[in-house]
Image (tube, rainbow, N blue to C red; front, side):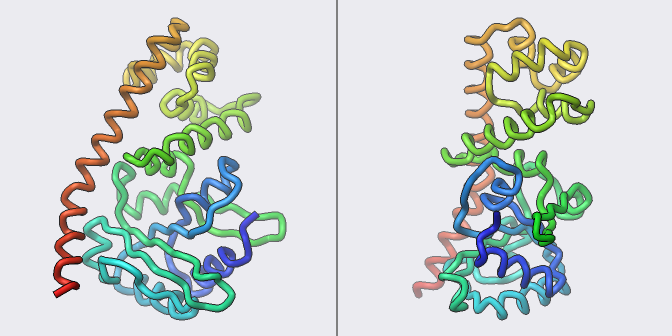
Length: 249
């Protein structure tokens, strides 16, 4: 269930017709892989009209920028996150983080085409980043993202394993991180495993039931993603530090 303050944020975004997708912890809650998240993370379309609509929504929420960079389209398009704190009395100083570009998931237009719309029992609904895109976005250098990533795919597997589609099986092959479940899937769907192993070679260990080799390969895979994320953010962090120095002058 979405807590009332976060629901108010999402309602304002929807009311002002901001083209935005929920991501981060709250998206993980809706996909059944988390119990609680305090903040609201959004990926948005960074064109002029949408940013005007976003500014109106943020004004309703009394949201102010709390760090560098400032709220400018050029920073969003570069890949930076803009951080806001809500001053509205109903929002308990909630933080909103907004981005337009994410490593490894393609353009906003592609994210929008693949989006999911999740409706709650009371009828409230919101557009959410698709599960495959959310999983890819979680492949960061942050320690907290990897357990969440694993739970996201496991939750999807347990929800759909009785009557899976070919697309679901392929998703599990490419994204599961639990050795036991990977071995289970690889050995049950051998033809699909052979095809998916062309992209994810560690599936060959899963098909053989070689758990030690599979665990080692999963650790190496995670290390590569962490390093790729570190390299991606290195120039962006340098830009942020430059902006901080300029602000202190």
